[in-house]
Image 1 (spheres, helix red, strand yellow):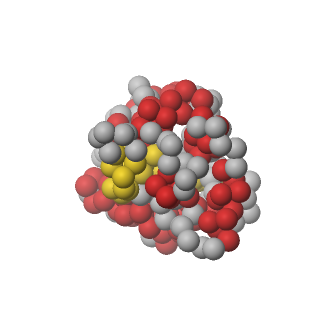
Image 2 (cartoon, helix red, strand yellow):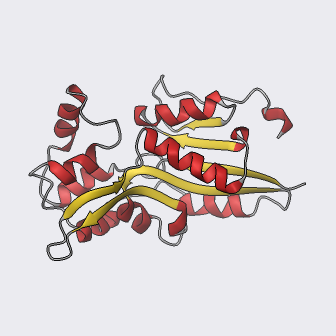
Image 3 (cartoon, one colour):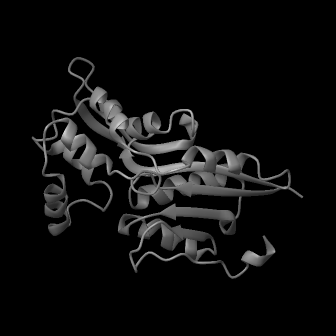
Length: 212
């Protein structure tokens, strides 16, 4: 009997070594990204993970970013070893099980799609989507941000479309911004995989995992 699973992963520092925000900052000539993020965290203005999108939309130092900068950022991002091999292995695990691999990240969608071109299909990538000014290329607004609850919403849409129960979900993440979605997956006996040494991010085996 065919067993289907939804495998979802974060992007920044889960599939890549670099943080998209740091790379984009260097590209546009700004070198204080972490200070900006800390300032947003101190006033609790933006949910974790969505800082870069907020800065691109509102911060004067980041308003210079254009679509071409997001695509160019990809060339400076180093993917972790064997990401392409990992996806090929998922496609060849046997006829009795199938994994639908999707990337859900607060990073701009253009960066993720460009970085994973030829590895993950574009329609399996869910990043933050912007609306651009056609004349200037400047970001006008955010169409959808895949951060915090936004990640959970995307995950639930994918699960429903695939017709899967919650205990057939696997999520990989690396940081505290992944905690909400990881807690959601764990709550319903899914499996979470931590790509981090942070003590607050732990992997959990579902109680009924043996039956899978």
